Image (cartoon, rainbow, N blue to C red):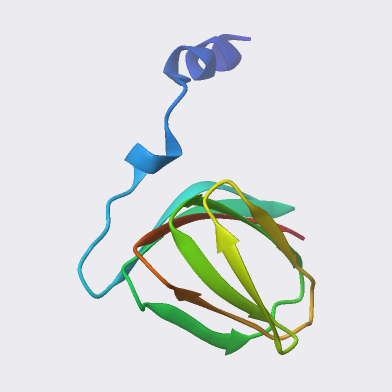
Amino acid sequence: MEETNELLEKLSANSLINEIAFQQNAIVSKQIIKKPNGNVTLFAFDKDESLTEHTTPFDALVYIVDGIMKITIGGKPFEVKAGEILLMPANVPHGLKAEVPTKMLLTMIK
């Protein structure tokens, strides 16, 4: 119970936009939580920064915190804007490119 009380004292509500900063010509990431069954990572992409097409063995949910991300899944392009989510299915090729400086929350469930 003491460990739980210590954990509760450290908790606070935070704005995702303020949790990570952009860096020029770079992608910055900050792991929010990592567990055996999945993880949540916050990213900040400068304009035109991208992740080349790849696959993952797990479903991933993208939430755009700020900006606009072009996401291609299985060859189909999507323009995902702030406040929108998109599911990237496991084992389907996908790539991402920031149309403007963009902050993105990625939740991967194993």
